[in-house]
Every structure is written in structure tokens, then in C-alpha cells.
Image (cartoon, rainbow, N blue to C red; front, side, top):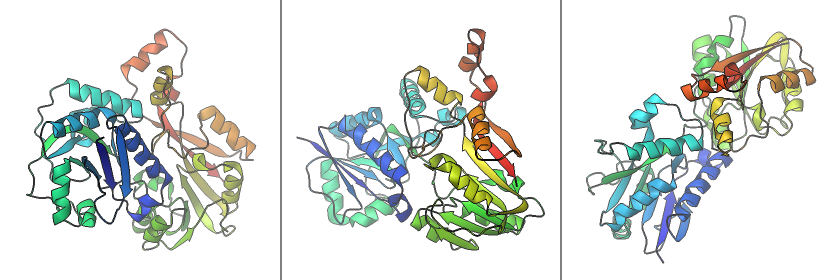
Length: 374
């Protein structure tokens, strides 16, 4: 029985992330539909024993689907030593359409392979993903320490002649994203900012440098919190529902893509409001489950979780504008503004308005900024 060995490198932040653990399970599931047996090893001390090919993932943020894995397997079985997939971000398709759902990725993948695949992309590294034949993996294991192979992009440089097939997508650094879009909410009289879910501190650092504010962060992931502590005024490690927060200490609270992850988001929102000084604000950023990409998938019988985005694996709550307004009212807030985060609507969605009554504005809304005045 041919077994696929998957070896994956996780940094400390990814290792503590349930979202990227889920993504790795998605890759394992896809691989199990291509190979009769699959073994997954995270940062192993040595190459796992076996006589089958080896799929190397230099980060658990990378996804390769069944169709691409099957193409890569066929190349290996036809005598190739190593196969690299094309990076979705480098294709023309990715420039034309944004990726919101798993089904959209599958559609882009099918369209990519149905078109002219004689592309000129040449991988500069075996990372973030490649498939090694069994013999190549055995040879490499004798020459390069497994840790270097998993983490060093130059580890195989000049050693192998690579073929390119398949398609892979690497998701954003969940904990390293810098949210430039919220800088406009830090007005002149804001001095102290509380950022809930500060990740590695990129947004807080940006606000400190550009606006001269003092930023306190709260972060559940301890590795991300450690990174944030290098640039923020203070970082509180733990679940925002449980940690102690100072009362009336901040001019602005930022909670970006946060409340939908909380089992009891109502009590947390009230707790955050108590940290704001009179005349201050809370700014939330909340995904819209009524976005056309989700509705389109539902019409096709699909609702697929991903590690980030509208259908993030760790979402407990889902909002559209009306449920959001009702939720804020039930939490006791009556002075707030909701601003849509709009995207372009594809023609196939616009055409639906000729046949049924739909809310085009809601379908184009990826999410909402909620500004609560306190």
C-alpha cells in the first residue's frame, strides 16, 4: 500500500491556532481521497519511515485540494522527482476575482486547469509546498536535516530539477495582518487605545507610529501575544471574556473580526463598553453572512468553513445588518453607526434581481464597521 507522508512546519503562532489546525485537516482529507493511506507529522525530528512520496508543507497556512494533489501524484508516478504547484496568488485568475469561499477556490482551480496551463512560473523554493518522490525524499533525508528542509526556503536550491503542476493557496498570516482601514477612526483626541485580538501587534504598532497613541492589546494566542508585546504599550494574554480590564481607561476600543468568535458576545461587548471613557467609542468590524459569496454557495448546497474570512472555522455567531442592529439594541446601545464594507457584485448576482426580490446592497457588503458612541 502506497502511503503519502505529509510533513509540515508550524511556527508557534500557527501551532496554537485552531483555525490552521483545521486547515491542515482539510489537506489531510483531500490527500486521503488521492492516496490509500496518509500519515501526517508536524515538525518531526526525522523523515517519517515509509516507502511512499512526501508532501512538504512549509506552513500550515497552505491549502492544496484533491484535484491538484491527484495531478501532482500522477507526475510523480510518471517518474518525476519533485512537483511544485502553481501559487494561486501568481495567476491571472487571482487578479481578476477575489477568493471568499472554498467553492470559489475549486472553481478557480477547475478554470485554471481547463485553460492554457503552459505557464512560465518557476518556483524559487520547495516551500511553501512540494511533493517529493519516495526515492528523492530518501536521498534528501540523508543530506539535509529535517528542520532545515521544512523551514529553509533555500534548502533544496540547485539540487533538484522541478516540474510544476497543481495549484495551491496560502492564506494570510492570521496574526500578522495590519489593518490600515481603521486608522481613520483614531481621531485627534484619542490617546489610549484598547485593541481586542491584537494578534502580533501589527495594527497597534501602525497606530502608535502614525497617530502617536498608546495601544494596549488583548490576545488569546500566547505566541502572537509575545510578538505583540515587543511593539505595544501593554499586552494582556488570555480570553477577553475572562481577563480583567481597567474601567474608563481608553478613548477607543477596537474589536476587529472578534465578536463573531465569542460564545457570549453580548456580555463581552458590555464589558468592553465599561473600559471606555465618557465620550469615547468602540469600533467593531463584523463579517456579513449575507455577502453574495455565501448566498451563492448556499444556493449550490454548500457551506464550507475556512481558516479565515466570512466562514471562519471558529465563528460562533453570524450577522447581517438587521440582526446586527437588533443585537446592538439588545446589548443596550442606542447611539451607533453602521458602515458597510462593499465589494463588487458579479453580473450573475445582479441578474437575479430580474426574477426575485433581493437586496443588492446587502449582497455586495462583505462586512460592517460598527461605531458605538459611549
